[in-house]
Every structure is written in structure tokens, then in C-alpha cells.
Length: 276
Image (cartoon, rainbow, N blue to C red; front, side, top):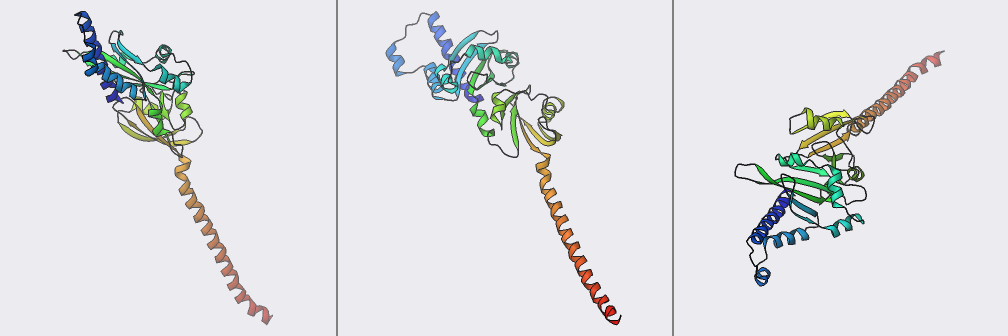
């Protein structure tokens, strides 16, 4: 996803810059040659339009001005069966643009009620000769792309959060679509704040229940963290079954032993009863 975003955005930016340069020089382009040799912009747009998971891409300068932008309004409308408001999505989500401008890759859940279910990816795109970032790219992508691998319900729960602890994906899709904040979950706090380790595991309190869970996490180089949780009861259940089985077998053996002792005692008391 990051590589695709970079490729689409780079081609779009170069095409936009070429168009601006041609316009500034008042270059007249032969339509026949354009038809024979598609421009980089046409290539990028064709690939972008073919990619059903990408719904919009925008290239911005670090000062916030937009260089080029493409939004698949019809595709967004098909997803949410509504009239999409791309500007509202961008404004309401509070995307950490400053972090991207400082060189970080950022993911954020942008699913809003009444709007397409998407997540936004922000990447540094271009640098100047001094190595300073000059342009960034923002892409809105169908949340199903990241949600699908985690959508199978089972004894183990999987979820993904961004740097701030907001859900990107969850085994219970409703939580992801509701953009739930998991920053207060103990294991998320450990992964994002207290630990410098790229992965780890810990027994913690269930943030949505009364028991304990065994949690594991693995950080990605893109800022998202993947978590896996399994209830303590599920882990201990096999041991409890073995304990119950041992208790049952022990009880049966004790009963059988008592029965043998009782039978043996009858053989001892029977001759005495006959003498009496």
C-alpha cells in the first residue's frame, strides 16, 4: 500500500509539474502525439482508476497547499450508498499532517458515520537537495483492505492501532468502523509508551471484561502496531480439564479401592459369624 501510494503520487506530481512548466512556456502540444504516447499523468490516472481499493490521492507541499488531487467520488458513493463529502472526512479526522511533514509514515482510521469507510495513509514524498521534505502524499483507501485479514472471529482477538491507539482494524469489524479509542488499554499503553521493544507479550486486564487476557504485540515500521489477545480462561481450560479428569479418575480408583476393602473384610468376618 505504501509503495503504491508513493508510485501513484510521484507520477501525478511529476505530471502536474510538467503541465505547469509547459503552460508557463506556452508550449503547444499536438493532440495526435498525446494520443500515441500517453503522458505520465494519464498512466498514473489509469492505474489509479483501475485500483478499486484506492479512493483518493492528494499531493501537498509542506506548507499545506495542494499540488494535485484525484478523488473517486463515484467509487466512494458505491461504498457508502451516500453522497460522500471528502472535505468533511479530511477535516473531521484530524490527520497528523505535521508528523508526515517531519518524515513519519502515518495511518489513521477515517471511517465516519454516513461517509465511506476508509483509512488514510500519509507519506513523505519528495525532498530537496538538502534532504528536507518538500512534498507529502495523502491517500484514502478502502478500510476493507486492512480489515479483511482480521475479520475472522475466534477464541483469539486480533486488532491494529495507530501511534495514538486508535483502531485501524479489529476482529469485530464494528469496533473498527466506530473508530474506537484503545489508547487506554493496558497492552496498547505498554506497546506505544512504556516499551521500546519491537514486540512483546504480557498478561493484562481485559479492557472490556472482568478477567485477564494474555496479549502480544508487534510494531511495524509504518507506525501501526498489531495485537493478539486470548482470554486467560481459554488458555487455562485444558489444564482445568486435565485436573477434572484426574479428580474423576482418582475418585473412581478410591471407590474401587473401598469396594475391594469391603469385600475383603466380608471374607474375614464371615467365619467368625459362623462360629458365633
